[in-house]
Amino acid sequence: MQPPTYISIPIEPGQTWEVDFFRPEDAASVVNLFLTVYGQGYPIKTFIQPERLIEENAARRTISSVARTPRGDIVGHSSLFISAPWEGIYEAGSGAVLPEYRGGHGIFTQLEAHNCETAAKKFGVAAIMAEPVCSHPFAQRVAHNLGYVSCALEVDLMPAAAYEKEKSATGRVAALLGFMTRKPRPQLIYLPAVYERQLRLIYSLFDDERSFSPSDGVLPNDVRTCLKTQVFDFAQVARLAVFEAGVDFAATITREEEAVRSQGVVVIQVWLKLSWPWVGQTVEELRRLGYFLGGAMPRWFDDDGLLMQKIIGRPNWAGMKIEYDWNKELVALVKADWAEITGQE
Image 1 (spheres, one colour):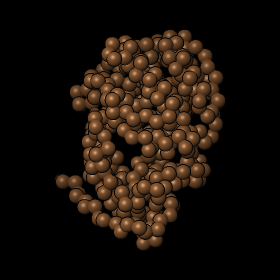
Image 2: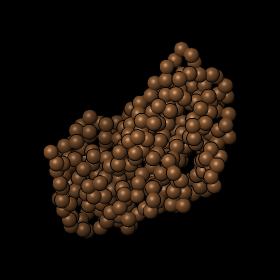
Image 3: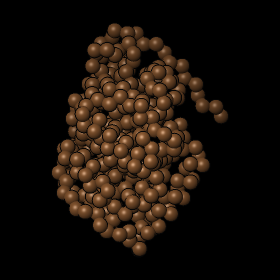
Image 4: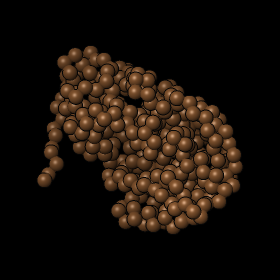
């Protein structure tokens, strides 16, 4: 059976609007918005399938905020949705604003503020993560102004094809990972020796308390490595969430990498737990396999996570347009580690 074909319908410009929570009757208009802005290639199907959008919002796996006109047209959308292993942290994203309603209207900024304040408070969200893209500075400015702290860089996260309709990218697009605490949870972090300086610097800017200890433990003999792999075909990205790591860690990662590369994956991310006394050993094993630093991921497993990543081919460093001194420093830290691991410049 062929998937349904949707045709985007023009919306009258110049209407008044207000930001509110999603209602089931908004679904068709939200889909129309995403088709108008991104086309049918948008990789997250929730936002181009009305029934799925209604279902995800009803289950609170997605919490959509919309800019709605008096006649019911949706001219802007953003949402909180679950993308991490721990369901207490939500990602803020899937933002879209009709071209006719951009440029000084402030719709996107108000939608993001609604996510961070109204939605997070109403639904008891513990922490929020955002992925401002690095192909242009606008999303980075919004994240900075809302109080997100950039803790990691996802190199070559999305293909240029995802932005083809807007023609806003040349080559693959990186994204920063910004985090915001809503409910504090101080915790002990084990620092891999090779990244002690980088992680201390990242956490010095973060908005929640952490204490630190050297990661000098060894991988346990009585634990079998347990991970969950997600492959995003359109993006050619694989994410490996490691829930337990034992002496079979390197062999397990190697096996998973071979499997995802056979599916055309060109970006592999590995998520580790910084609550393991032996996380340093897993880092060394990954570096030996060609993985380099991404950064910290606060509350990713409820315990903090560490992002390591591997890119097949040369990353699109030249395509990054980075705003703010700290973001530039974070990118430099990641690129320096990539250069050390790969021997490239």
